Image (cartoon, rainbow, N blue to C red; front, side, top):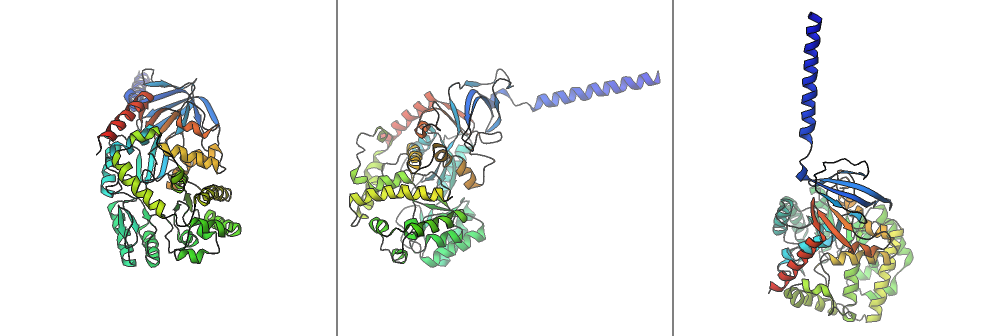
Length: 476
């Protein structure tokens, strides 16, 4: 009787424990409304270039909860799901060189650039010079789900010389200015420091010193007064627009530091051995390159290009076209000097050759467009053109795709959070109707976009385009 009573007590305790455990497991299951199931999709592995057909990808709020074969996949049958048969899933794309709030040069950009990024599958951007407070405000609104847009990493205002050429800049004349500006931007929450071209030599190295002290990355232009090799050695994280590369590949580099440089001189003095030596240094120092190839082509060939029939122009406000793009056109035209169109065409092709050489040497690349600060550079759209330019430079479609997915994740040290379609990564994804590894142009065949867990069907993306066109027409 005593033993039996004890057994009954034990059985009761065991039953209670099982019940509590079962309820605990049940309580841990996410609500159905927090889930989105992508069924029968082909996942593009951007690490290896392999395709994983018939996969089910389950999203839970802002992250990927699981990736696996569709047949045994388990999830609540009443969870929202999308039949993705025939579609290819890639990580969300990054544009690693944009300007979101460039002084007053791009009024209304919140209603133009942000939705155009989303429509084009650009779920993350590196902002290389903007009004910091405004961009931080947009970022907060996006993170809270009150505004549609990409993830944003920003430098805030650029650091430039005593007389900056562009808005959203801080004038730097002395080393003291440099130390003060870097410390202030770090305090205000900038993610990194952006250098422009006109900073005096002594101030450049003060920036590098203060940035290391503040533990904040410095990126951007190789300033005119210093060599690319010096900036790479100093720890500059990325070079933009290939600035410093042609200078460092020439025996005339000392003369170029004095300002006597043209693209014709770059071509005439290019030394392959010097270029190879610089490439080896950049690879060894892990100095990334963001060459903005579409911008380079557009600027160099602007007098030979006709955008009058470009359908994307309808998304651009008149103020951008008639004022800001006109400013850039005039600046570019005046900067040609003695270089005629034939030389500039040769230089555009040489840039592709040099990018291919750097790539083969092990230098890492990022896709960026300078949108919308360039002439006829369209937010979102131009990133797809940039990927095509990488292929023209000798990259495989996979390698080109990596410049806008895996490579940005590695650049930011966030490979465990973004850049691939894997469990635990952000729910930033793009559904394509064709395989991008066969033709990089297929990144434009967008069937749907998921930004921070929010799914936009093709019809919704088209509606967004309509809203952008309306907003563009309303701008003064």
